[in-house]
Image 1 (spheres, rainbow, N blue to C red):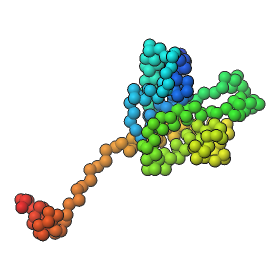
Image 2: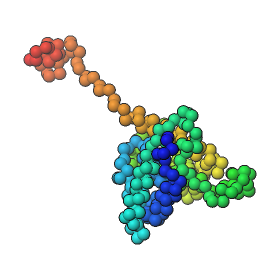
Image 3: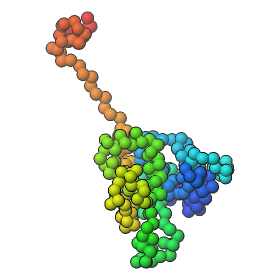
Image 4: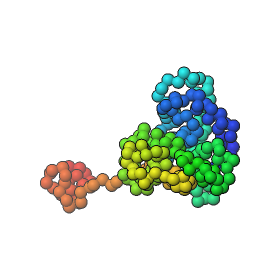
Amino acid sequence: MADDTRLSDAELDRLDVLLDRCTDPETGLGNLEMLDGFLSALAVGPVEVALDAALPLVWGMGEVARRDARQTREAETLIARLSDEIVQRVRQDPEDGVAHEALMPMLGLPPEAEDATDGAEGGLDGVPADFPFAAAWAAGFLRAAAEHEDAWSAWMREHDGIENDLGVIARLAIVDASQLDDADMAEADMLSLEERFDLAYDLPDILHDMYLQRLHDRRPQPARRADVPGRNDPCRCGSGRKFKACCGAPTLH
């Protein structure tokens, strides 16, 4: 992925601010991590969704008094660029030599982790043990999938790999036991911080596999040969004659 196509750190910071200002706090996608998950699902899922049609889900359903039309347009321009960047990201095969970090989604860490050292008391690399790593990203992904639930469910039924991959993402979205029943999961499915890091590390492979399956499923299928009677079979027109002497003859009766 060419560096000049990526949003700069300053542009990402600006988009994060705009999301906070322009989205409904209850129903919108108010941070970069959730937005990255949402756009990733659009890029790899079984349904072709135009970004313009998906933007209302980014902003949320409520009325946001702080929303400013100019800032919303600015945010939409940055979102469109981020969407293009994510499409390029999921197209990359993680085995093609691209640095794995360059293919990772945007996953947030708590501020205190920035100054932590390995083995810190708070948890893995200084991250608190109860920090829901990658949960916001997974929630954004599932938000997009839920908008086309029937298509995603059918896709999972057709492909065991898709079902397994979506199961990983669903587990990442679980942050407390109250969510287990709705997700049809048991308490044993709750992830530790270490397990969250391990599963999140596999996200580039999961997204690339989904993208390849999407491409495969959209390839034009060869036209099937019409079911034509054999030359000596009775003609289907009901004449009682053989097909070769009736509708199958060079000159029709």
